[in-house]
Image (cartoon, rainbow, N blue to C red; front, side):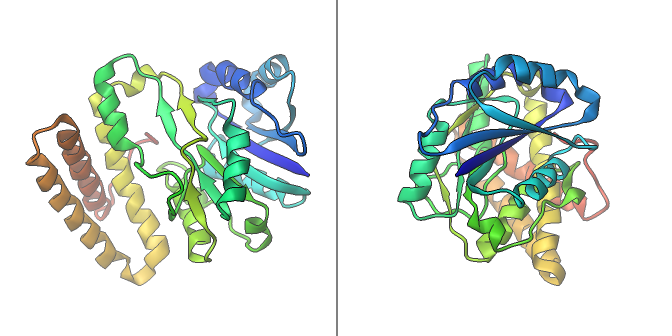
Length: 294
């Protein structure tokens, strides 16, 4: 039986592709399953095909072309492909990361031992300025190993074949510029009573990106999270979404005030993140849209 793992090779992350491919080529493989990487590539960046051929020596792979270089559209290209295949597990990884060599074995063991359908894992970050570690610690989900969750991100996830056998879900391409399509996608499976859990042992490490070691990047990121949160709530709650959105804005503002009273660095960062998410949600009610995906 096969395992298919998908990644979008994006133009903006080509500088990280070599390290990503090298980490994939060192991944430990189970003896009883066949592992295949599926690369989604825009025809405009054909150079990436040469890199894949050069740096992947051990792994089987397949390249699919996508006319659009965005996350939800490329994920759907993969879903259409995989629904015609015979496989046991599948998943998604980001192309700007280094994959731990035990990632695959740990995912397989976890999904078997925990009787779950979908697994998410953490993303760690390479940093040069240690002061930004607190920013990433607050930004990333803080979940316990084995914890039940309502959604996972496509930067690091793994799932059983049966979730696609029992659904026709696709990623919503309306979210291409704003993010959140993965949260909405996997939340649909949660509502269908599939079991989603968190696996701390299967981690990835995001490569160092100088653009992200700036306080303004983190604030803009949370502003965008607030906006995309509105879009997700509108899809989930329909006519009730406006009430839900105002409740969440109130919750975020109360949270910001609470953490502002705690004199620690992480609490101050969390307070500012809460405030900017509330601001993003509030502005989103008045036709505000982020200029680009951050």
